[in-house]
Image 1 (tube, each protein chain N blue to C red):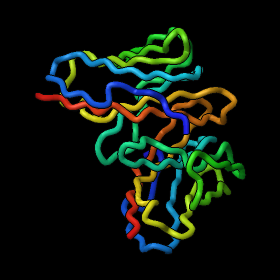
Image 2 (cartoon, rainbow over the protein chains, first blue to last red; image 1 turned 120 degrees about the vertical axis):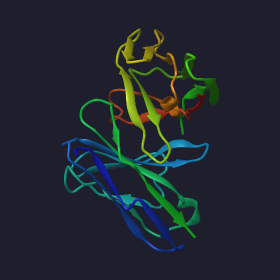
Image 3 (cartoon, one colour; image 1 turned 45 degrees about the vertical axis):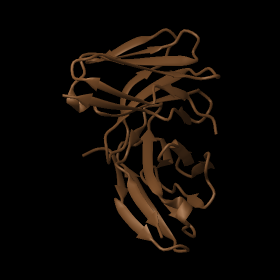
Image 4 (cartoon, rainbow over the protein chains, first blue to last red; image 1 turned 60 degrees about the vertical axis):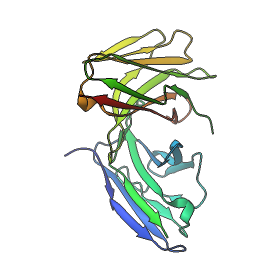
Length: 111
Length: 112
C-alpha cells in the first residue's frame, strides 16, 4: 500500500544510546519532515527536506540528525538519547502542495 | 516557536450535534489545512484550503479560509461516534519550504 512507513513502532532506549528511526515513502514526494508530538505541545518540526540531498533544521533540531540520500528515505538519528527525547515521532511527506501524508508514528521512551 | 490559536481546546457533544472549531493567527497564510488524528495514529488530512474566502466541503465536514487570511473554521455536521479524535489546524506560506505552523488541537468526544 502506498504511504509513509515508519519503523520501529515502539522503542525503549537507555540514556546515551543512539538509534535511527526509519522513514520511507513510495509516492515520489519531494518534501519530507520529521515531527515530535508531546502532550500539550502539539506537533513540533525537527528537521525537513525539500528533496534528495537537501535538508534543513526545524523548530527543535538539537540532538537529532537527518540525511536524504534518496527521494524515498529520510532517516532520523538520535545521537545520544536523553529522557527529554521521550516522545512520539512522526514522519510526513508531501508532493508540491502542503497536504502532508503522515506515518503511523514511532513511540520512543528513553530511560 | 510560532503556533496557531486553536479553540476550543476540547469538546464533549451528543451524537447528532453539529460542531464548530476555529483557528486564528497573528500572521497571514496562503494555505490552511485541517487534520484529524485518531488515537495511536498519525494525523490524516481532511481539508486543504488555498484561497482566501474559500469554502470547501468533504462529506459532513466544511472548512473556510478566512477572508483576512488569518483564520480558518471547521464545521462538522450531524456528528457520529467515529468523529472522536483530535483535530488540528495548520497554516503554510509559499516560499517557506512547505513548513507548516500548527495549532495545539481540539479534542472531540462524542456521546452516542
